Amino acid sequence: MTLDRLDALVTGGLFKFVISTSHDPDVDWASMGMADPATSHQIEECEGALGLTLPAPYRAFLERWNGGHLWQVMHGNRRIYETIHLFGTEELVYRNLRLRGWMPSDFHRGLLWFGRTDNRYHLFDLSTRTAAPAVVGGGELDKPHDWLRNRVAESFTDFLKKLLDSDGGEFWLPNNRAGLMQHVLGVLDSMIVQAPYPAQYPNVGRVTVTYRLGPGARPEELARVETALGFRLPGPLRTLLTKWNGADLFCVSQDGQELWNVHVLDTSYLSSSSCLHQVGDGRYLAFAASHGHKFLLNVDAEESPVYFAPDGPMDRVFDLAPSLSRFLWTLQEERGRRFWVGP
View (cartoon, one colour):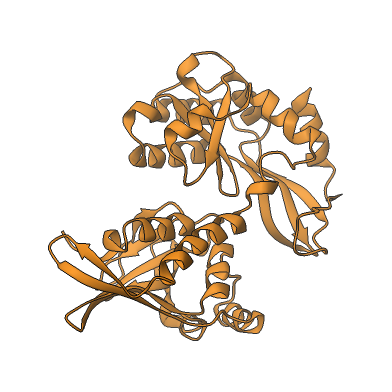
């Protein structure tokens, strides 16, 4: 019955959807973007790769749609963002294997990540070993044990029912991605107002930390970048540039000599073709650098991690952080050390 209710919205096309918390009063339409049904072979391959049996309600969902984006909010003919993203078989494998790399093994054995809502993760609690496990989750910056303690629905069916009953509003309106970025930038602000300040770094000794910050980018400056590049900048990067159009973060100096910093590129530099790189099948935009090393976003991905490319020929990129928000959060948590202090 719950899947039938969802199906009615999927097949209905665009529908009226007013977001009272939106800063843009013209955003008032939404749609459902769902994939074709998963085959039995795809589901079996997914279960084999993950080494588990998918919860029965989610398997039933995949048999109708192999993942999708629910309540895609539109501005005219342009999609602004997806409020609910449920993973298909390939993405279930990709995202959970990556999550296992970041998570202590004690936790990932009992969790299955199946969707996200802006900055919030939705996971099944598999520790109960039931056919319809509870849905748990929390913020991107929360710890795994916080996710387990936060039960958001008794089952996937209950999770969908809450979404449908609230017209998509459940789980996401108070926790939008812009809010997460503003939180992280606010933490950085609290550090910046204290600069310059002393710090002690391993293998370096006592140093002084300061910052150089450009004024926020104007809408026309962002538009010029997007025209030059031929695509819309990722939302979190737009938020960062609106805050600081170019910045040197964690400028570390010792005895009057600057040792390193993390340089966030400004719109004039981002407009140049030298920031856009083709690596394999992906297009990557370098948005920051540190002594020749580049930090990049995949411009073809809807929710790009931050990638790292060492100084030299651009023939490979490496996963560095699951999102730009997490990159900035880790940067401030470790006072910049993780990204530029060598072994």
